[in-house]
View 1: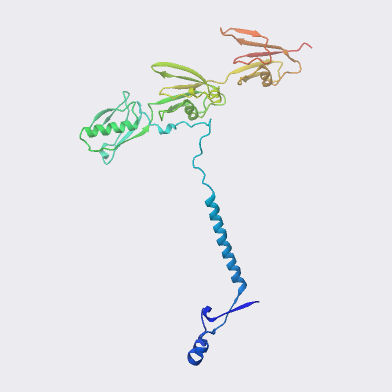
View 2: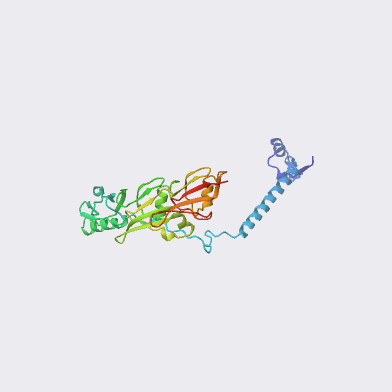
Length: 334
């Protein structure tokens, strides 16, 4: 193994014997000033290898830092593409409007004696200490806070009151989801921006036995309003104007899905759901198809006309199927 000898100035320590010999013989100290007291023997290959590793690491670190500086930072918000769907303002940002029957809790900072939990009366008023009756019906929670604080200050009861109104129970502003919903019932209008689609989602969506159409009833501008809304078409055709904002007392009703009836020379006679844009051929397929004796030419259709009278016609295979249609398939003569 190759070794390398270093002079004494690179030695870390000397033995005590060498130091003692040097001190006891001063005459030799001058001549041996530059001579090693103890030879340090170290392998050269490991030292050079460590030096190369260290130098390589520095070069690699400098290259990575330079590459990172050259990469441009991505924009935190990508520009909106043409035709992109813009999200509507979230309903949770809107303030709740108090109504009759709501239970609220009112607190005043550093005045626990003024804490009140009360119910909004039918005429929209509550009773608050020191100021008496306060009209809160039809006002938002933030407006009610400001109104009570102003009355306390104007009455010289408090200099700078800080009022907080919390909603404990919602009974006044409610809407109803009836019929073929997964969770039918009455639901509170927790915001002023709750839409028809929001109520459908809150009620668990339309059940598998429900129709695609939702019947809406409510009062607008003092007049009764009735409207039938095809939910599938509303979203498929982007007719979001029918996804209007609900008001207290509105009702949504979903009827059972429409049926047609087929019997005669078919494999599975019975009643089936009328699908969207369904034709007579699809009705035959829903009934399992014709029996070996069945004939498409022998089909008869019984349907109610606009006057409610039942008429019988010979349908074509591409004719549409309507709710309450009765299809009869005759057997072939031969």
